[in-house]
Length: 79
Image (cartoon, rainbow, N blue to C red):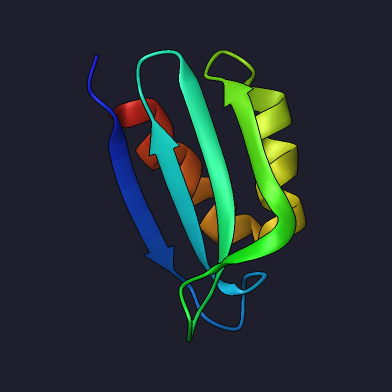
């Protein structure tokens, strides 16, 4: 199992400005990072089972707009 990592540099439309996704075949970790320092925003990290799509969707909606939520979900479920 290989871990995949991707950072979505969203800017003012996301908490912190960057949403970081780390995942493998079963687990998805979502983290909000500060745009300038690239450090994690406290209490803005969640880990889910990949099959829990509704929970992942709700987490992303709390971090960014629906447009970027859709883009990130597309990445998660197509990779």
